[in-house]
Length: 312
Image 1: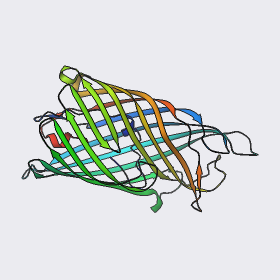
Image 2: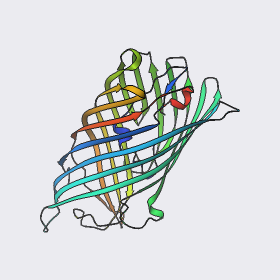
Image 3: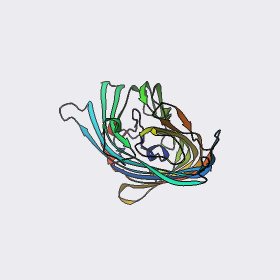
Image 4: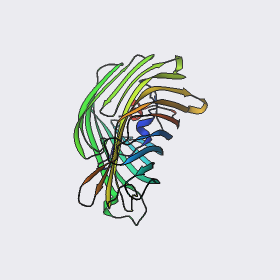
């Protein structure tokens, strides 16, 4: 779920569609489409007066593959596209007020491996090469980014799973190696789903999981190659770092034919928007905390292998 120098799964952190923990069948998101809108807010701690807002949307297709000879090995292939729009209204100086829209794109392939090491232990590895750029000039080496993580997961019993590991990620808008922790508790009617630092979900479920509702928090971000002028920056910008933490209520309906629709809202806090120029100087354009609204649609039928359905 994460990339090196770029983690733009954009909407993947904005909208978390939950999976069941049934031992015989598991919801698996074959296709999901997601979007989120963040209201423009005043730029913090900057000599530039103005406001910045964001709009994110993306689509992802996932295909699981279990080895026939050994059902202990599961491969998961994911192909995704993400789009981040940065809306700016700012006064960088003598030029007066500047209004602009800047788009950043990602095309990613996620190779995932879930390997059973012991009846209770599994090794989870994700490797994600990604093109992350404004795509306004010919692609080059600076547009190709990577991310990876690896951790062990223990199935304590039917209700409890926990794990730990490491990730090389830019969820904070910068390249970092960070520890990961995982805790999943599911009683059928209540689910606690924690993958630190990515997400924290506290959800309640109606019979047959027709409706899920509760609270969630999610962190996501990335670093994007920038090839053209940014009017409000004033310098030649080489890279853009972006991250945000969302907190708020979430509700998911299961519709016919394994279709799910998710609504999510609340506040986005701990935001970061930084322009890095060709001299490695950081120009801060971080806006204040703001309300946001997200919506997602996914096709998530039941599959027999519970490991393939887990959203690590």
